[in-house]
Image (cartoon, rainbow, N blue to C red):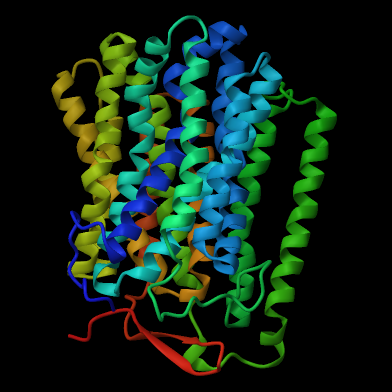
Length: 492
């Protein structure tokens, strides 16, 4: 460990510099990813979009993030976070500029779909931060990384309309979107030249094979295949939303082709997973190298309920407050941004509590709070005082985001060399949650929608009982064959 063993947020050297550079990179990815939301009315006016086309753009924006997080997680483990983050920021500036200068709905739709890739940046920093911080500071560090970076979407909501006005005219929104693309492009180079994958003298452990996640028992292999299904289900759900049954962006033939493609992709995915793990079917994995896949599965379910509900609720909350309390859109937007504002403190808070009081206990308390919080939100109606409704939304938001922080306090403690892939799968489950919840929201009223989230949180609480508190050490093998023990808990 470096001499700077303290956790000092105001330091810009050593591991703290890596943390600051990484959350800024993540902040920019979210700034770009949600740059359309606050400018939507101007964009719709310029391009002459219908209501259903606007909704389609919102869905397309999160569609590709599901496979992207899994793929980017694999690439991060293989090539290291420094290269992958830099390339992602530079390459994704292209669809961002494309969106800024779109002249038709089709062009806007394609660029929005491609921009879903930038939403995978989150996964890269999880691995980067886990390389630099010891286990007893990891939850806090990952929480700061996640919470401050996540704030990019709220910052965009506050600043982009002002930038558009300042740059002026009917094309103000185009310049505002282009500014975010330029930031992404430039910071990609800055990141590359100012960070390293590990502290000096540390080993960066890579997976043996790329193309699938390693598991360490036959039962876990089956379990992993089952856990892949909801990701394909969410992508099929998106296809259905875009087909003639939904918003008719693609025809019946296109939809059918998508379903066939998804089925083939699943078969390929299972084959790749078998290919990576075939050795295990012949020879059992030595005990010191084993890890339990159920740990990953539990975190997937919890992230589905926490981050999935956050993405869905952020999309509908301004409208909900406007309809329920008769607020203007500007006022409703400000009130709803209170929910996102909590990210700055709640997510680091969740990680910190997890470092201090144990991973499992923290998650149990936060998940229970989540279920109660959304149940309370389902009771909000126009007879409530507005202040009480805002307090209720903020309290609920605290449990959601502290829960996210606590989930990612556990992710890096499962298997070091697979951290990117585990973060990728768990992160993808957050997007699966968003797709499922937003689909539910398009069919029911707000009260039922909040109730559905509350029920999934109860389900999360029950699955949590199966999780084991990380303890002892993780074992990794260096390239020269020597074994390194990485501490995952303090021995009390």
